[in-house]
Length: 528
Image 1: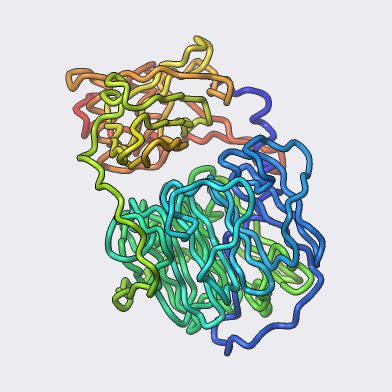
Image 2: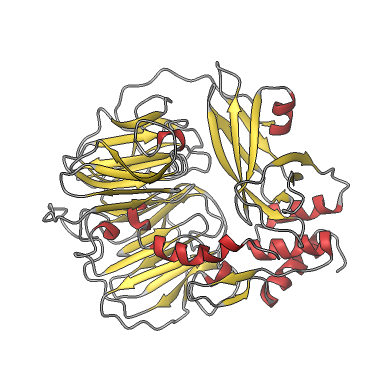
């Protein structure tokens, strides 16, 4: 595998950024406390969103830099900022950055939003994007917020959690897949909230951990099921950090548990392959102050004795005066449904036109109902920008297994879709999505952001179609899927060099991944 040089620094950069990721893991008060107001400090607010960074201190104005798509930096424009730019927000308690939108909570409990509002994630009843931070009316007493790819969570001082926005995997927790444009009152007695791309997790005041939305093994319950309602994951949890495919939980006794995708050894256990049950990773961590601040731990380091950060392929844990010993101990957590969610009384917006039955995106392109641009992103993702030409109604689309993407740069990989993707785009809106893919050519470079692609379809008679269909059904680890694909396309299980933050390297496709790949090939009818 010929990886471009700039990717060699990615693991080290991710390790540093992991310490700031708690801006989407936002403790409001320690589990088990009364919720009385904590003493305020002069600690700065530091936040890292999806390709965005934020900083603010005391009553001074805030600063933002990075990807300015949809106006998510809140500077008043949609352009990128390559150095800190001022934004007119003062007296900030916290900031939470999502994929296309940003949430800010002021010390007076008011909620401010900026960026994409395609799915109603601003919670203001509409769909209009905002290029500068705007107050959300009718919302008050907020102590924490969390932002995913297209959904938002807020937590008030009474311990109530509200959700709004995108709901295609049930990440709003209301037992539906219908988007919501006003905040929905979901749970009470909550102490902290966290949102990953399509998933939500909450710690309640009794220390129980709950999750809902996109599963794929990241709930630690022994399966890969999604959940459209909150389900109980663990007891006695002080802090949690979750990304798209895995999660970590810290207990008051100093034990750290991890579960989900284990690519690159991200879980830190002695196990290989996916870990579908909560498994002890470390013990003896000092955690007495974790979650005690009303600000995110990453933004109040002087007050907290522990920080969890998780970027999916890199994990960082910072603790004070702690001795840690890896101790893999599978610990299944019983599933349990939460109480039936109840909606927040709020003004009902005008009903939106219902989208049609999902149509293959390629057909929508050919019918000139949408325009699409596809860019390189990484080994396992392609970035796609979709613009609707229908100004009257939303368009439901799907990208089915059998879709592949041919790179216009002959030196870079062609990519194959590994999971069927469905979504809805609003009238006249532009959406950015990240498609799950794998490389089709072992001896080419990993695509980067400058590479563009054309979309095509395999027929059901193509051998690679059979394999991609099995991968979609079985949901294997990424490296096992990649090895199986290369075995079909290039007659090799290949290899992926993984560089750690310490500079060491190892293969991302080992014996366990090859064995898993062989099982996939057998199910697809190959005799390798």
